[in-house]
Image (spheres, helix red, strand yellow):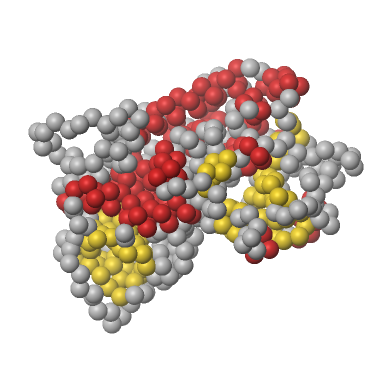
Length: 511
């Protein structure tokens, strides 16, 4: 594949994997008055959030129900009127006959074994991005540092600029991380109440305590390769520079081999998780408080009050605005998020205007433009966007374009990049990614007896897939503590020999 010389970096611009924050998930802190509790037999578990983490948590509980007859009822609450959280689509011109465009979380990769397996189990069609294998350039705000279209001449340009060792050493670091990460799918996967524990078990302490730049420099990767190629990956995938974001997430931003999405929209994965879980799903339902009631928890929402044996919070804690005991609130430090502007548009221009990039009229401009701040660190001009990428056609003679930026892009700005050629435009501002500086501490997974937090994993790794891994761990903890069971049986040694799963088994799916 033509992008191999750039460490499979470039497809990230075509199919960014976003995290799973549910923006302004709950807005009211006011506890409802005059609510009467709906009687319900226990055991019953509540899940707050119907995105990747919440929907998969319901699915994991249902797997234990099927295998061991636990009979746990599941209620899932979401303020929004749809399932999927940050995985949502829009149609150009609001025309559902046209191909959908992902507004949020766009891709997963083959090593994302839960989502990959889900597409097969749920009979969903995977769409790869080979048809969008466009020429790619790296822009520093004033000039193109590199353009790459896959020929032997382009490969020589890459080797001339960066040498052979920088791509190879970066590739080795990423592959080493992936090899260790894959242990999370085995029967011997660590279980953790603290993210620090799984970080230690995986040997990722140095990765999360160093910036991407620091870590790769220590591996002998050249500074210009890091500040140009690697930073292009961290900026398109997490809107953070290589000298800011921690090295584990930096490595994840480059682990994009076999990138795919679901035809029709990735949200279908999460709809299927919930449908197959047989959970009660309450959309358009705002949760206002979670309060202890003996050894149980009472959830108050816009539909009333219900008591649960356990509650799973599957949304960014401080953005929920749910009233909780102060002893719980004090455990979770504030987590800032990136405010990302996503601009989708259609254009009859087959590539951006060369004039915007200071190139002579008639020059060819790449259809995928990634960015680096290497120039601005030296006092030069800052890139005005993080990435710009074409995504196939919307209808005959028109192309879909997605732009990520840190500020609103006006119609005038768009006209400067696509002069007189812009048709439909859709803008969205997301609190899309947690800010991910080096760290050695994380929020707790278990907030109290019977109260668990899926998004504690986000400052460690923030992807759709890792939300399903975090939720699986949470469900295993919950089932073991509340029901002396688990997704694949009790963690407490019964003294009975358990059958060994196949070598290609995926923990949670296969037992």
